[in-house]
Every structure is written in C-alpha cells, then in structure tokens.
Image (tube, rainbow, N blue to C red; front, side, top):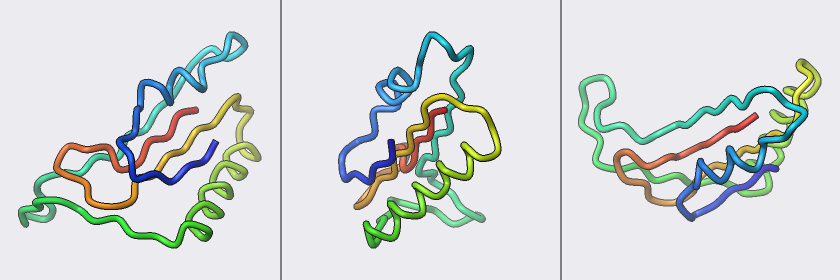
Length: 94
C-alpha cells in the first residue's frame, strides 16, 4: 500500500494494517518535522509533489524492498501540504 495524503498520518493504523499472523515482527519508520536544522529554527515545512511521479517512486521503493527481502505487507504514506513541528511527514511499516 502506497499513499500520498494531505491528512494526518495514523501510524498506529498503518502498523496494524501490516500485522499478519504469519509474520513475526513489524518494523516502522516515522519521519517527523523537527524544529532545528543545522542550527536554523524551523517553524513548519511545506511538502509539494507531483503525485504521479511520487507514487511511482514509492511503488518502486516497495518493489525493491520485496526483491531484497522476504517481507509481508508494506505500507508507505507520505504527507503533502503544510506540516507543523512534530507532525509525521512519512511513515513506513513493514
């Protein structure tokens, strides 16, 4: 499952979506908006993207993951739009 969204990412729901009885673990990655980058204060981030290209790239990342490792479900969500400090910008669950 690959998705671009302007909505808040529900990382708990994403984790639950990939959990299967035949898989013994779930690994997650959450990218969040931080308040300081190289000593410079960040107040928010604006994510823009060309949806067709971004989704194609995310699908390619999923395919490469499946080629390298024997994984169950893979879920990748990436936010678009304005994100405030602490918000999840990207979530990956495998």
